[in-house]
Length: 191
Image (cartoon, rainbow, N blue to C red; front, side, top):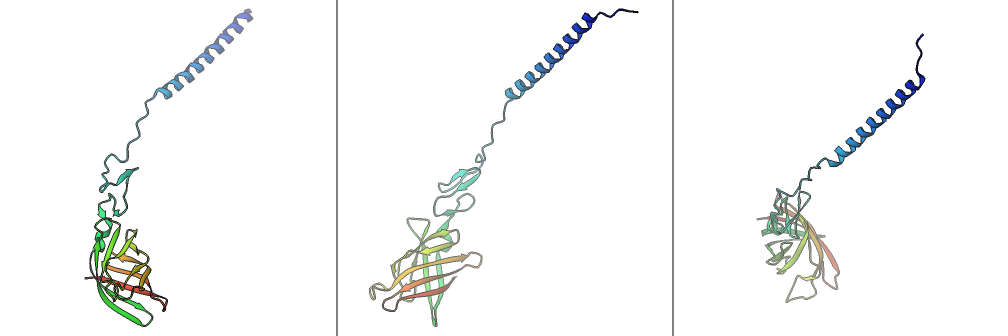
């Protein structure tokens, strides 16, 4: 019978364990080193091919437009769509009036429009300002019967455009003491 050298078996077993441990440690180290040294691709700038007009600013691939400009690239001047002659029909209770108003772009701000011949007393330079892409509000406290009755005031109002149909719908309030406030509904049709 062959005699087994117990010391030799124990030595080979320990050496094998050390070699396996060393191999696993080296593999983990190399994996970490590879991952940490791997080049990360630079993040693509979403604004590289985006050109914003009218002083718009690109942010994450979309244009942020200054007041008075709209569109994907700030290419649309807000008040242009309202310009021209409009036939207006308004009503308040049983009173119904029809008149023609001229809407002009503000010469100084793209977010304002000016209406001339507004209401039945032909008020001039009635100012309105942008709410959103298709709507506006009238500036509060504007005299609508200048030179005759200085107490006829447009106190508030708004309008929303149906761009496809070239219509504007809205309301405005006229205050003329001692009769109080009267709310008018109106409909404008572009001529």
